Image 1: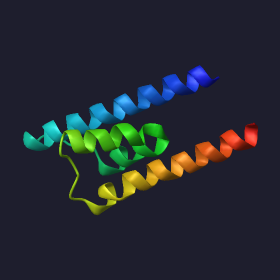
Image 2 (image 1 turned 60 degrees about the horizontal axis):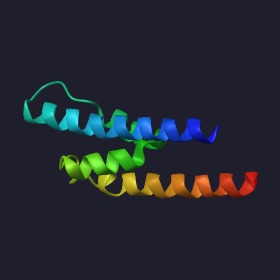
Image 3 (image 1 turned 90 degrees about the horizontal axis):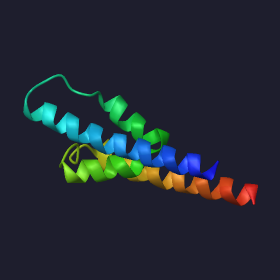
Length: 90
């Protein structure tokens, strides 16, 4: 089960990173964009590290307060939740 969780987290974080890059490219080209709800949603389901890395690597959504503060908050909440689950199961 632990290896499945690791594979899931790696996959969802890579996907989040790629989504931020795609959305930045689309923004530059004035094309159809990925919704902010989707970008935050991918972070909420475990892709917060990839979203934060993508946000900074592509300089995308860095001026929006809900991304600037929201993504790190999601990451902190996920860390607390993981710690609680891990210590409850042990």
